[in-house]
Length: 71
Image 1 (tube, rainbow, N blue to C red):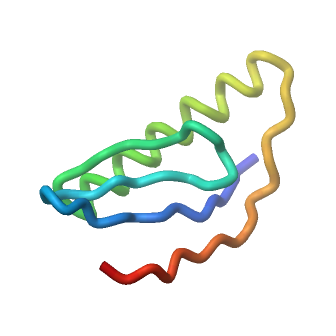
Image 2: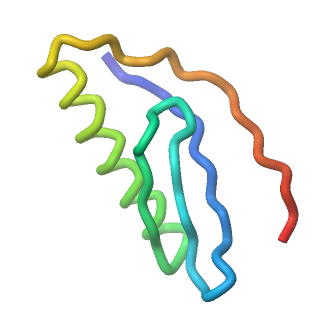
């Protein structure tokens, strides 16, 4: 079953991005650019969801999250 999750890219003051998935607590990554961030967060989400399934825990339902903070 394919899951879709909202992710947030926050531009870091020192450069690069902090990328996270709000419905998966602790699912964070960093990247220098957007494409790298997409790859990194996909891998992080896949590992996170696989660990939930392996532990017999429910996979959260993807929800909408919006971060409209401007930097």
